[in-house]
Each structure stands twice: as C-alpha cells, then as structure tokens.
Length: 252
Image 1 (cartoon, rainbow, N blue to C red):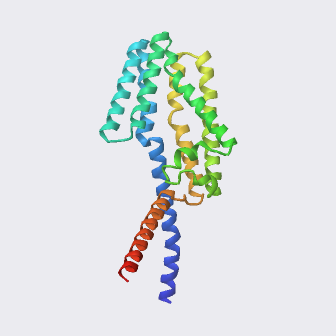
Image 2 (tube, rainbow, N blue to C red):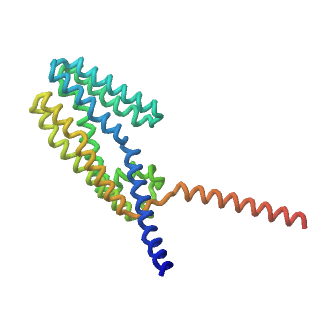
C-alpha cells in the first residue's frame, strides 16, 4: 500500500513540477524581454515627472530636462547592473526625442508624441503580424526561450499561443492609442500627461498577463540551441570513433 501511495505521489509531483518549471521559465522570459519592473518605471515615471513639473510651473524646458535627467539616471542604473544595452538606452532615447520635440515646437503635448506614435505603430505591427501568421511576439520571445523560429514549423501549439498573444498586445495598444490621440488633438498638455501616466502600467500588465496565460497553456518550447549543441557533440563523437577505427585498422 505504501509503495502505491508513493507511486501516486511521484506521478502527481512530476507534472506539477514540470508545470512549475514552465511557468517560471515563461515569467523569466517575459521579464527579460520587456524589461521587468524597472522597464515599467522607465516608461512611466519620467512622464510623471514632466507632467507634475509642467502642471506647477508651465515651463516646457525645465519639465523636459527634469524628465530626461531622470531617464538618464535610470539608464545608468541599468548599465551599472550590467543589463542589456537595449533596455538601458531605449527609455533614454524615447524621452530625449520627446523633450526635443516639446522644446523645439513650444508645445508641451509634443513631449508625449514620439511615445504615442511608437505605441500606435507597435499596435499595428502586432495586429498585422498576427494576421500574417507570423506573430511579432514569437520573434521577440523565440530567442529568449532558445526556440528561435521552431514555433513556426515544428510547434503549432506555440504558433497559436504567439498569435493570440500578439492579437492581445495589438488590440490593447490600439485601444490605448484611441484614447490618447483625441486628447493630443483636442485636450491640453496637462490632461494628456495625466491620462498617459494612468495608461502606462495597467495596459502593459494586462498584455503581459494574457501573454503568460497563453504561453503556459501552450506546448513547451523546442530548445533548438540544445539540439544544435547535441548534434555538434554527436558529430565530434562520430569523428573520434572514425579516427579510432582508422588507428586500429592501421595497427592491424
């Protein structure tokens, strides 16, 4: 009886352990791909600093420079942590373009325009890629999972998951754009700034959560890097066996 109980316990722990590993790997991949908590701070707090200072003094230059200075500090913090250059500089460049546009045009709303255009373009790219059955999210996360493009031809379950997730990202980003652009055209800079800050983190978290849901229910990724390494080891082993056989033949 004890052995049966132990066997049942092992059988239930195995799938649970495997599922936990898949969930942990998916969470780690999403954090790596989208910058984690610091990434959310980088995309939200500089804009918050801009709108707070501008609400107080209505000075575009001081507001833009303060936001840019904070973005540089956050980027430097990433470099100090030896994070990827992509995450370290993407936020700085975005804020720098916004600050430049705002100061050159004299229109505080233009501080937010580069980010809004990026959001709109990215939303369209997600939707178009999903329609084309070449989902953008698979291109982003494939290398992180070490599956590269194997999900397209060898893992249809993950293709479906990436397609659903790309639809989710695309529709959420387009909905965000549908709220922000009317404010850019007809609202004032303070209204636009506060709404943009409010729409910074929640849509992102929703998109990441839906992506996580789709991927943890999908088949496990095919580690093509491990496959290539195994094939290379087998090739070397085969070459060594052939050399050994030639040596033995020569001795005979």
